[in-house]
Structures are given as C-alpha cells and as structure tokens.
View 1: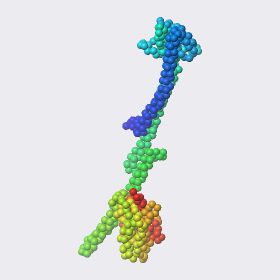
View 2 (view 1 turned 120 degrees about the horizontal axis):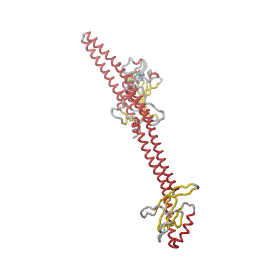
View 3 (view 1 turned 90 degrees about the vertical axis):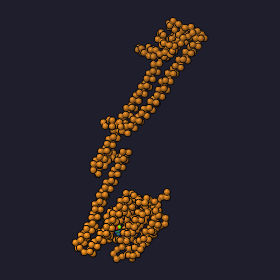
View 4 (view 1 turned 135 degrees about the vertical axis):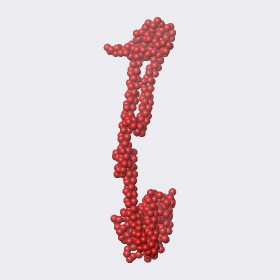
Length: 461
Ligand SMILES: Nc1ncnc2c1ncn2[C@@H]1O[C@H](COP(=O)(O)OP(=O)(O)O)[C@@H](O)[C@H]1O
Ligand SMILES: [Mg+2]
C-alpha cells in the first residue's frame, strides 16, 4: 500500500473525516441560518416597504387623480434615500420621478423588476442595481417604485463569501489535522509493529516503544510490555525448571542403572531381587516427583482440579490435623490444632489440603532440633480480611536469606539433604497460593519456622 492511501485508511483519519463532515454540516447550517436571517429577510423587508408605498400611491391616485400623486412623487424623488420613482404617461414619456426613462421591462406580467441604475457619487458614477415594483395605473399611467438595492446585495455577497471561506477553512484545517493525526498515529503503530517483529524474530528482551503521553497507544504498549515481561520470566523459569528436572531425574536414574548393573555382575539371585526392589522404590519416588511437578504446573497455570468453591478452613484444619497428630506422637512430639470457627475461603479443597499437608510434612521432618521432638502448632485465624493458616515448629527454621528460594522447584537446604524429599513441597504450596490469589509467608518462629497461608476471605455472594 502506498503512503497516502495508507494514511487515508487509518481509523484516526476516518474518525477525523467523520468529525470534519459533521463540523462542516453544522457550520454550513449555522451560517445558512445567519444568511437567511439577514440578507433574505432584509430583502423581504425592502419588498414589503416598496409594496406598501405603491399601495399608498395607488390609493391616492384613486382619490385625487394624477395630480394627487404627481406632487408626492416629485417631492420624494428629490430625497437622497436610495428610493427610485418614475411616473410615466401611457405612451411611456416621463412625467415625474428620478428615473430618466422606463427601464427595460421583462416579458410577461411580472411586476417585480430589477435593472441597472447609474448613481452619481461625488465625481464618479457607480453602477448599482435597483429593484422596483411596476404598476399600470387606471388611465394608462405607469408607476414604478423601487429602491437602490446595491448595499443589500453587497451585504449578501459578503455574507455568502464569509460562508464559503469559513467552509473552506474548516475543510482545510480538518483535512490537514486529520492527516497529521493519522500520520502520527500510523508512525507509532508502525513502531509497535516493527518492535513485535524483532521480538518474534527471537529478541525476547525487546519491548514496545512508549511515547510517555499515557494515551491509549501508550497504555496498549505498556500492557504488551507487561505481557512480554511475564512471558520472558515464564520462559526463564521454564528453562530453569527443565534443566532442574533433567538434573533431578538423572541422579535417581543413574543410581538405578548402577544398582542394576552391579546386581547383574554379581549374578546372585538375592542381589537381583534387591536391585529390583530398589528399582521399584526409586520409580515410586520418580513418579511422586512427576506428579508433584504436574500438580505445580496445573496450580500455576490457574487450573483448579475441582473448580473453586466455598471451603470451610476451620474444618479443613481439623481434618488434616487429625491425620497428622498420630505421626507427631509417633515421634514423641505433639501437634496442637486450633482454628476459629466458620473461616471460609473460595478455593479448591483438595489443593488447599495438599498445601497444608506439605507444610505439616516439613514441620514433622525439619521441625525439631537434633535430640528434640517436634512441637507443632496449626492455627487458623481471621486477620483483617484474610484467612491465615499457620503451621509453626521449633526446629532450626529457614535462614532469612533462603526464604525466597526454598519455594523454587527442587530447592532443598543443605542440612535437609539427609531427609527424604524432592524439594517440590513448598513449590506446590506456592503454586496453590498463586491459584488462590493468596500468599505463602515464611517467618522466624524464634526458634523454628512459622509458615502461613494467607488467603482472601470469601465474600458472601
Ligand atoms: N519447617 C521447616 N524447617 C526448616 N526448614 C524447612 C522447613 N520447611 C522447609 N524447609 C526447607 O525448605 C526446603 C524445601 O522444602 P520442600 O519444598 O517442602 O522440599 P522437601 O520437603 O522435599 O525438602 C527443605 O528442603 C528444607 O531445607
Ligand atoms: Mg516438603
């Protein structure tokens, strides 16, 4: 498409053109109204005056005959008012009036005539136009009464010219403005198009140009840039996850392979059996890892397994705590659960239970210093408009500088490596919180870890 054509096809230009037409129509209507009210009405007024005068003269003629109006016509002819008169004999010779002779009459019986009029203005003679009413008086006399309408015509001309100029100016300004606006618009759209091409070509760090005027194009560019930021960070995360996954799956697979090879070399039946059992265990763990990864991916993608519904958090805490109490007691510890009644959130019950389970799991695994037994508390409370579920223990806790990264996939702190686990527990909790528009808050329980699930309270529908 060629340049100017492209300009004409922008929505800005079309909008400008539409407004231009509307504007021109209203300007024309307004000026037309002014024209009508001045020029046309003035002319009507003149015609009306002339007709009244003719009527008066005819009446006078009826009453007093030709001599009756002769005086009047003579007297009025000398006034310098722009009025024209002619009283002529039946044959056409002038009897009285300030017209030299009968003007050329139009054919037919039209009474209104317009004719050129020479007017002496100081030393110069000007050509004006006169408008007059022509009557045949009974007895054959002819009477012409009229006015010099030159000033009126000039006035009308000025108004007409003003209308044309105003329309022309409106058109030029509107058209020019429209073109200018569309060109500016087009330039910026082109810049955005160009930017998206480079990004598509693989330059993921590229961004849409923002003019800084905060107009709709800027807002669009900003929104696109935010989207690109998001995509970039997701892609980064994805890369990291895949390399982590690859790494984390490689280790158990290598272990399985080594074990099986050793068993094969030994040739002993019991070794075979042991290797197979070990393979089953490792496979189970691999499956767990895969399942956890899938759950995280689903939660982060915003897919609730059972759909979001009202979840009674108080009940949920009681249920999960009941399950974990025996495990804590088995290790000689305690688990104390307390929750305010009637706490509700909008969520996926299964995923929320999984998140709470993961926290309790960690508290059981890491929540006691060497030689001590786990003392765990689970609580549910309403804080402002948030429902907060807290799991607290008295173990070593997580150092402040590590609290940010333990929620990343596969991250396990060094001192935890001796315990079973895949480093995905907190990642799933984090994903579930994201799905619920909530947050996972890790704090120091002095000593120990205080992990809180902060969820928006369900507003009654
Ligand atoms: N209650 C806790 N006390 C101390 N450290 C913890 C606690 N919970 C989690 N952590 C640390 O965070 C890491 C990540 O936890 P998680 O994602 O659940 O993985 P996993 O439990 O499989 O190790 C753990 O390996 C551990 O180092
Ligand atoms: Mg865990």
